[in-house]
Image (cartoon, rainbow, N blue to C red; front, top):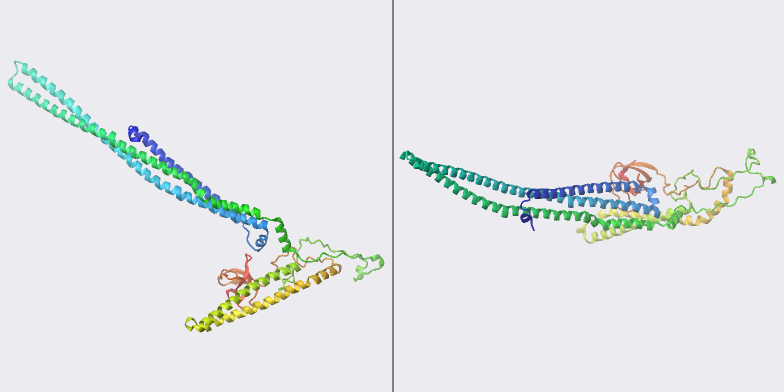
Length: 503
């Protein structure tokens, strides 16, 4: 079954049906476009949400050491990745459905317009032929009627005995002309009728069926293309489902990675002071005449014990010392060990570089054409100085760490024995006021401010990147090695060339 055979007389219906199909394609494109806008807005809101809750800075980095904090940051990061997949869905829908269908729709509109125009033209040609047929038919009828009338008139005059011969001949001649003209009109009518019937047969059995079948083929192609667009609406999202699932799995993993016991142990590790608990306070019997070593104004006045509960919100930070002696014992050992690890890594790096330079110098000495050995001397000298400096620092910090371990027992004993005396001498003093309640590791005080003159990319371990014009806190000045330690506003700390900043 096809349109050309079964719907040969349904031009208006085909016109309306094919237009409705094109309208549906256009409507679906608009539907998908609005869906992409929703996805884009959704992704944008998710990214803003992730950015809002993503922690930065030294304090946040310290908190992320706890599994419950880190897991939350993992969830924030996974949500940001999830937002990226929503953006990808919107992009693929726009390019794979909206753009493609819009382009195809324009082609279909032009194709349909051409077919309908050809059908209209064929219809108009048939109507023109039919009008010509009607005209020849009417002329034949008119001429034939006049011919019969002229013939009758000639017969009447011929039968009239009073008629003049010349008049009879004239009437006969006129009738003969009219009859001849009527015969010609009859032949024209017959020829035009044959032409019209042939044209009508071609119109209804060839032209219209072909055009309507082409419209049917066009509409079926439209439906197949639209069906593919329908399928893509789901396929685009299915394509990114594995990654979306991975993001969701990452969020679930963050929940499983949260460990309360581990966080408690880490908190203990970060904040354990190493001090012993205060010893019991001795009874002072003033009724037996015991006099405190104080002025007469305070004679026999009871001593007020300072509150020992270490939950005061008032914090007093001692000046940072290079050996970290301002920190509690446990925190001091941790910082010293961390410093030793950093110096050891840096020292190993300098030793590796020194070994590489020595090998290179040996190559140059054996093959002068490859380079001048003297050109390596400045680097070798600088590396040697760095090795010496780092070894000196390593020895110094190792001795301080050994001292910290040796001093644990004596320090704790001294603290316990002297606590009561210290409190008696100064009732306002709190034994916990000499270090921060939270044992913050950022207690080191900057020794100055500096401005970056140039941008520096800190690519090696221990260095930090800076940008031109950036304000920096100087933590350690140049010790003759061309480097100084600085602290950035975002909490990053490391070494930079001294020549890159000004005070």
